[in-house]
Length: 231
Length: 299
Picture 1 (cartoon, rainbow over the protein chains, first blue to last red):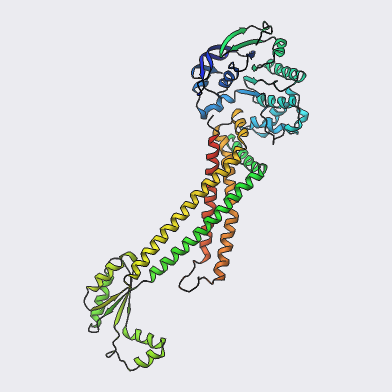
Picture 2: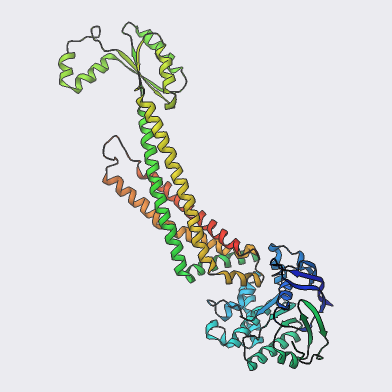
């Protein structure tokens, strides 16, 4: 079943720069997809449109049955609750500890304390950070901080997890640890879309790869067929 | 249940963030405190000027001198006629004998001269003391009375009263304008201070939106925080108003320089001002927060 349907999407920024040209794409439930391409090829714009940080200039984007392009500002939270997002710079709140950072995403849903506790513990267990719940972000390594961000992104069991260069700031070993966690999450049924520059990871994971070039869909590789093309 | 949980969490978070962003909170609170003190002083001054003006205006009386030829029935009917006029607050009869007695008691010189005067021989006339409701219409009332029978002279301090009324009117308008202007300036000043507080938490708002907090969910903690800052900022101005004004009132014995200028009695005056200050603090705190947070919700 389709989770995401992108149809003839164009995106031109107010500055006049066109980031996406006539893009059509279908992503099924439970897939693990890499979006690759050189800097400025439109990768970030594409995923920003998925969680409605940006609106397409024309075309249709349906995520989990919701027409994202038509979503008003006041209703954006509806799609955000179905999507988890992870960034290169983690975006953790420095004044909250690990537990509070993760719980933050569950609190907005108005769950009870006990429910939130259960969810936080489960998410922290999945990313292997249960022991560090009381630590603050600055006391953690980069890899650990990214795992906190991952726990926060999955606490509400989203159908879709969007990762914007999650390993961009991490070394090779730590990156692979994060990838292992992502694979775990994917196995539990969450669809994962990951933007990356890291060709090594893409090679190793053998997943579907979408290659963008100057805002156009250049190639859509089947699982494992991608072989370190020059990007 | 869900709504209450979210609301109580919002209130808790707003309290927490006041202390977590302590230095900026203190900056906002001090800003509110200083401006509210200025507002309080302006209100105290303008209210006292108003009070003084009202008292003076109330004191202005039309003195109607009645001809000595008038019989007691004539005098009675004249009084009734005056009372029937528009804009009349009170009409008091002052008989010539009463006036004479009062004058004789007030000075020995008068006493010597007047001791031989009888009701028939006295040159002093019976009078009606007339007070009006609206001071601006005093001239019309005086003119009407002048036309009546047995009225010899009508006096109310012509010229002086009109001038006084127009001066008080200007002073009143200026003081009200000043207070309103001050409140508006305060609101913007506080809005800007809170904006800085919130600017430092842009990331927090961004993440809240990212994890699916609805706009109202994001706004409420900031509005509560603004409300809380407003209340905190109003505490010192309220204390200054209550204790300062009572101390001033006691020190000057309720009057400034002369018994002519009397101050407003502290109760319930200071409590009214305190309530106004609290409401201004709360309103501008909320307004400031809302204005600031709205800016970051336009994603």
